[in-house]
Image 1: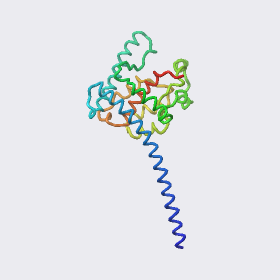
Image 2: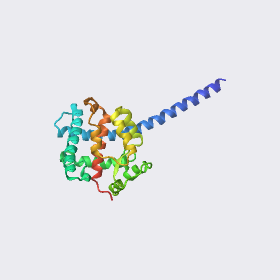
Image 3: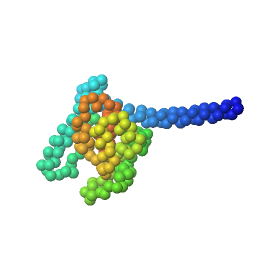
Image 4: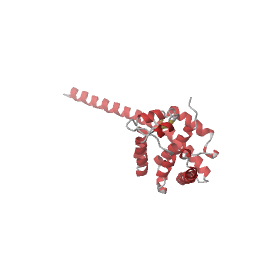
Length: 226
């Protein structure tokens, strides 16, 4: 009987140890990716803090200012576009060199390897995940040459983590919408964030969403893919 009990407890012990080992490996893998993500967010944070002359301790105010500036920029561009009746020209413009540094591009290009599939997927992969959507002729023409552009993966673990950690209705609504529509544009995203409260900008997941969706994803669109 004692031998049986010893064997029983040995099996239980080994099972628990193996389970904890797997969990530890998974956490290490995820935390390693999160470390790379956080490094990119911090770099973006440094850029906008410097641009708006805001101390790092108040970095959330820089994120708020960035969203406000984007919305104002889109409003002005929209007025011009409406007057000219040319809706093709509404797009995010990062013309200020303080927001595009050599390090920014180095971090981005490195993330294409380290964060492949976790964050970055090709636009053609993105559209395949939305097979229930029927593209209009206008949309088909607009996305014709974007197959290899890298976009944020809003279908898997990264987006689930964002939604859970952000715990914000506006962020959740945007991500769910991104999963359903064939493509989305920075002006609609910035508008969707317009009503965030100042306290919301302190949330790391919300900072991450802004950095990747409204900064790094746009830098991707400026890269020539061969």
